[in-house]
Image (cartoon, rainbow over all chains, first blue to last red; front, side, top):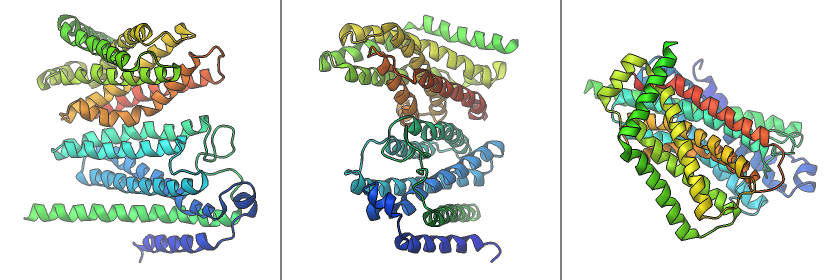
Length: 229
Length: 219
């Protein structure tokens, strides 16, 4: 119990987010009067947490890449790789949920919006990371080179998604001349929505950590099997 | 400062290699010329926006080709030698400098060819030349480091393109926005901010290269 309380917390938070996300009363003004979002605004509880948790998960991946360079044990490399993989899955889900939402609200799944482009770049960067990993056969070398690329890519990717979307006009909230940051619009969130959104973010991050650590544990077991046999 | 001395010596070595084995230099030059010529045959004289887009895309491919060989041409033994006498940091700095210089040269050449063949659409040629130099530097910095990674993975230019193209998008987007200014009479606001952002990104890339490169070459 002491060690896996956060897994229970993750399930509880996600169950809460799924139930409350579909039941909560949407702010009349934002959802119906000022925009054409209507009930699709509920996607906010699912689409946006995907990107928040993707960012959190790839940051964990970065930390393990730095750790690997300082202390090259295999487990750090596995952690970096598995967290990057989970981050990529979250990113794919974020892109898909966003495309569904865009299809209803903006008329097409893909609108060449700066943030859509940023999302697509994120996926390309991490897919390239896996191509790079698989192109190297030597385990130690793979860990080191992949870690270097991971760190390099992260520090170019983050300023790009933090700065560029704010400088140009965008359909998302937080573009040029609009209030808010690239993730959330300033004042369209009422307290009831916040009370669902932030638990959902935490729930997805915990789930991401859970999935990644499970994958790493599988790798550790496989490795042990190989060394015994 | 022995560091500066090392960097200058390594830079000179690259320059000498380039002068003595001229086939690589002229190879890239021919690549630039023939690519732009093919483009001219295919496109004729396109309008401003297409011109701009084509120009930066061609810069991207020139950069991949010009920079890729900088690490692939060195043999393993020679690398070890440089590493032991000069240190990894001096080595990467000299490579960054050399590739930036090479790329600026190539960018200016392709700008001249573009203006000759694809039409002289620039309203503000002097400003655009400056942007091209800055852009050539920015592209070469990112690709120099990626060439180092690709060389370590014992891979060819294809891997470099896979690794580099997503990462170069912010630079290319900023460059396209900046260079749009050279196509119009009115100076748009935010030019200084955009150039500042580009220079900031360059500084970031240099810092990351200098910090991360020693880890790449540890064996």
